[in-house]
Length: 267
Image 1 (spheres, rainbow, N blue to C red):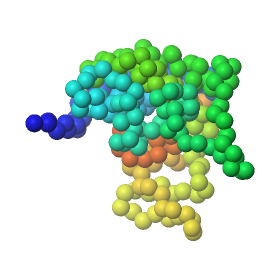
Image 2: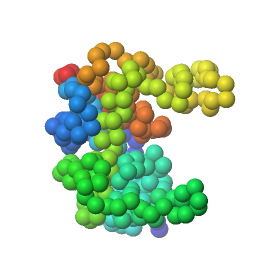
Image 3: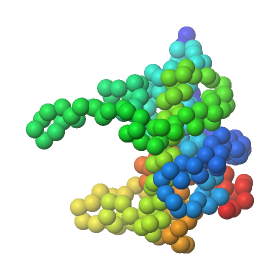
């Protein structure tokens, strides 16, 4: 008889414990942000970015773990990563890594130019790799801690992919946070008015209605306050709403990031 695996919902206590300590330390977060922007990163913003990255990687590992469990394995392989993403499109983050990983080779599609000629894949010389790809190894220790916390291990290729996804995701988050500071708030796809669930949305003519936002996300979406030289906690939360396009993963990342910064002193 095949046992149907179900995923238990996390209790408030479990979530608080899970977010108490992030394996991605603020010093690592600051190093990534320095690669992207000269802006100062506040202490609470560093903890927030670390927490969001942790949540995203934890969800990816959990999805891969459940895929492996169906084959009675506790060691993850790249195929488990693909299965996790296939089952939950929200986990498809860190896309720039896909061009550099054999795991995703052939899955990103073939590009054609205006004449219909196939565009060759990008060269993989070290000097031309994005900073996030070059520095992916910095995430190895944190990734291995997350794997242990889920009671699994992973083959080196899988660890490499998780390192790369974490690095690219956090680098993209840093770019989005810097953009929020420069532009004074979230400004995407024209004028978008965040609405409460159940309330009518006011949208521009011809524009699709925006997804409803949780009430705790409204402050992060609104016009920011403060100087244009410091990335703060709310800037990272706003960047999270940009980088994670919606659904349970975004809400969980925001909730756990707020819990993390609540349990640490504000910076």
